[in-house]
Structure formats: C-alpha cells, structure tokens
Image 1 (tube, rainbow, N blue to C red):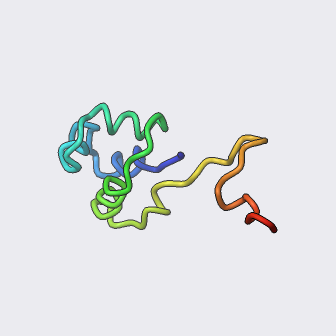
Image 2: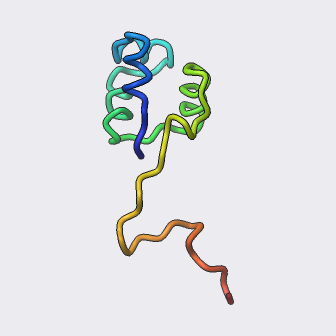
Length: 80
C-alpha cells in the first residue's frame, strides 16, 4: 500500500521516533509503514488519520494489483 506518511511527518519536522511516540508504536513500525513493507491495522490507520487531521484515503492508497490477481470486489457473485 502506498502512503504519504513520510511527507506528512516531514512537514512537521518529526523524526520517525517522534511519530512513533505520538502513535504509541516503535520507530521500526513507522519505518516499515513508510516503506510499504507493513500495512497498518485499521485502528492504527485511524490514529494516523486523526493525528494528521486527514481522511485515511488521503494518507493511504492501495497499489494497483498485479495481473492475474483479483480483489474481493472484482469477483463475480456465485451463480452470476
């Protein structure tokens, strides 16, 4: 998942450790989220959203799916 966390953090001149402290997570968690190696839990995503006063969708964007992969929304209903 792509995100704007690094940009938002930089706008406040916060280090990863500063952001981690505000969110109650480790600096490694912040680093992993920023680098797209870890998708935050829904409660953490809401905390990030509130902290930066932006909707979740303004911070996190799903990446385009690889060919051959299907999301739940792209599957047809049974019998349809």
